[in-house]
Image (cartoon, rainbow, N blue to C red; front, side, top):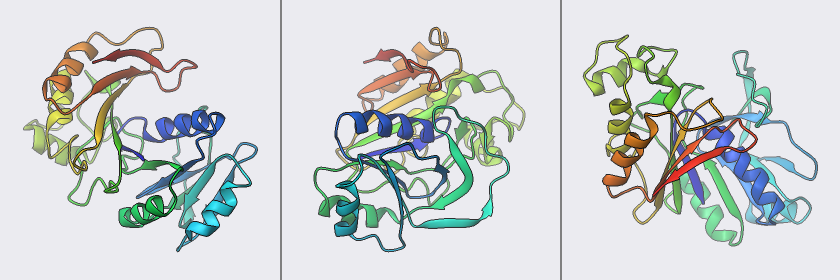
Length: 253
């Protein structure tokens, strides 16, 4: 079970891994403990909506398709501000997810299935500080990917760059509108109240530093990666351009 937390590419990461693991026969299920846009399904896949999903029903569906999207329900209000995403195309509909303990029970009852969980919400922003109830990471998670978008470096700390920017500004001790620096991303990655919050004991942790430039990592990426690795909690840091055909730019270990 892999859980994506943070901001700046969680859905795209889950969707790319879902597509890749489908081709490997890993029986992936993409789901959430928060809310996600309803994916536009490719062939030989399915969307299962249930407020009380049963393991037997999930296994039955997985015998018929090579990839499943699992959610509790469709939410009534259409989404009008969704950003276009060629890698993870979606409908303007939000899907409601499940309590993390439900996914723990399902994963225990369904060995052999790969679970990809979007466990945090950021409304498409590049940075966030988790609220008291966030992130909602299942206890059986084996890998946590902590995402941050390095293209916010140099941008003002506001509602365009960050989700709930007032809380983030207070946490970093900055005034609203202050330029975001690479040191701020480093601090968020290693702080147990931020990037390392609610990670199950024993879970592997990977940082994913997303950017738009597809050619090479931004120069600020290496010192951020070195700070994350020095914390002793991250096993690797991936520099990625998640919208690119070849998304991995560099891996730091």
